[in-house]
Amino acid sequence: MSKKTRRTFLFLSLGAALVPATVTAHHRDRDFERAREAVEKGEALPLADILLKVRNDLGGEVVGVFFKRKRGRWIYEFRVIDRSGQLWEVYVDAATARILKREDDD
Image 1: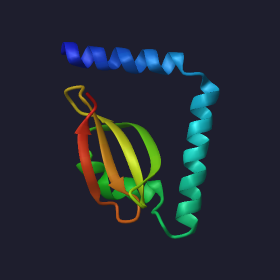
Image 2: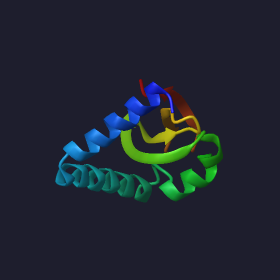
Image 3: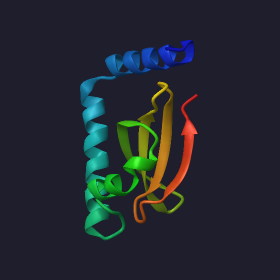
C-alpha cells in the first residue's frame, strides 16, 4: 500500500471516528429525504437504478453516496476506492445516470 493510500485511509478513519454519529445520521437522512422527493417528482432516478446503469463504469468499490443539487440538477456523488486504494469522487446526473465527472480526492 502506498504512502498516499495509507494517508487517505488514515484520514477517512479518523474523520469517521471524530464526526458524531448524530451529525452523520442527520446528513444521511437529509440526503435520503431530498432523493425521495426528487424521485417522486420525476426529477431523479432511484439510487438502485443509477447503480445498475453505472456500477461497471465507476472504477471501483462504492464506499459513500451523497445526493446534491448542483448547477440546477440533482447529482449522485459516489465515493469510490479503486483497486490500487485511490479514493475517487464520481459525479452522476441523477436524471440520466450519465457520469459527469471523475476526480481523485487529493
